[in-house]
Length: 223
Image (cartoon, rainbow, N blue to C red):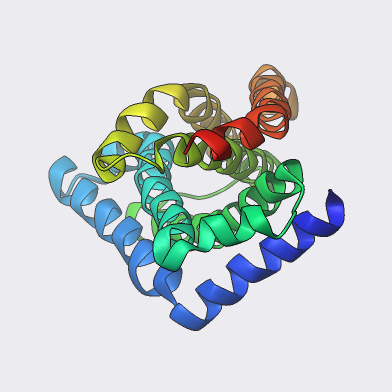
């Protein structure tokens, strides 16, 4: 399983490195979303700084949809999904590999958007551990759930429009916990302030990673 996961993750990351879709399209989309939020809230820096944690995670969620759709489309072209199934790869390894590749892209995206929040909104991070921890755990949860629901919608003609409806309501815990952790990280909070939200992210990650390992094979067969 782990060998297959490394093979699939390496394949997806090499494809993205050559196509540069994540850096050339997904990351700029997230930055544009932050700029639009800034225009919507006006020139007053106070509401910008107050709403920066939530706006950061909303931009991450929207960008996650694009990253997952890209991951699904890679397997949809030229019968690549059937090729992976015929290759005898472990379904659990296939899920973990694709989720790991999406998570790696999301971490890069979060770094870009985090820098954008600091520059555009004038946010000062006082506790980097809370902010980094929320980004790491959030990326894992978003990648695992996104890969699972992306596979679920892969066999449908309306997968591009169905995926956001399936994914966004499910990842509300990531939005809530990530926002609270960012608020604590930029408002001078202590690690104890973020402990319940870290537990929520850990539980979300564990549920979707375990669920994906168990059901990704049957979902691939039905798709």
